[in-house]
Length: 90
Image 1 (cartoon, rainbow, N blue to C red):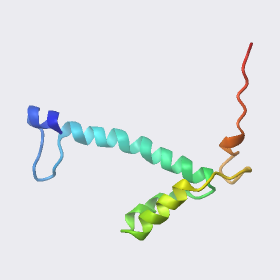
Image 2 (cartoon, helix red, strand yellow; image 1 turned 90 degrees about the horizontal axis):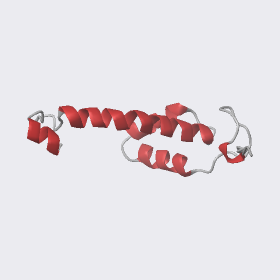
Image 3 (cartoon, rainbow, N blue to C red; image 1 turned 45 degrees about the vertical axis):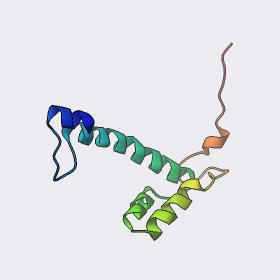
């Protein structure tokens, strides 16, 4: 935002500038992918990400789903990441 102010691309009405908007987009997409991956680890659908749109209760439920432990066995979305084996070559 400071750079947007310096180069004159900051808009006071939208409280957003060109560079800060691009930064938010660049951070949002990986964060969304990470949330979907985490929900799949706990055997929940990616649609549960939409819970954050509900004011208070939805955000609390979303946080609880994010901190649940991963399934210990294979689920609908693939094998558990806890049992991945790394093979080292000599």
